[in-house]
Length: 63
Ligand SMILES: [Zn+2]
Image (cartoon, rainbow, N blue to C red; front, top):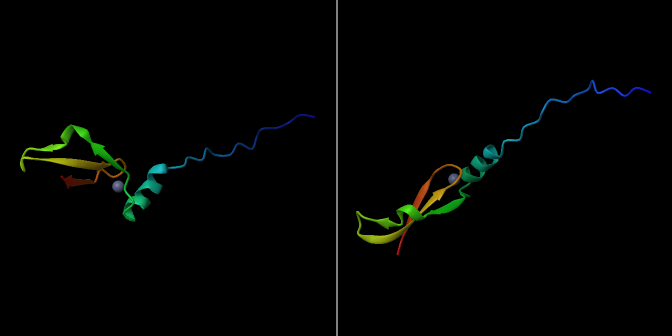
């Protein structure tokens, strides 16, 4: 018997980014602390800046 491999399914590529955008759209961001810019010079106080790894959205939490 000869087995055939003629039926090659097209490579299915899952896009995790699209799912992430859906999460971001529902306000479920993947916040990551931006350590490099923790100190806000303008305000002259220590703040923690968060950046969403998926959509790049930022939020700042002051201390
Ligand atoms: Zn996001």
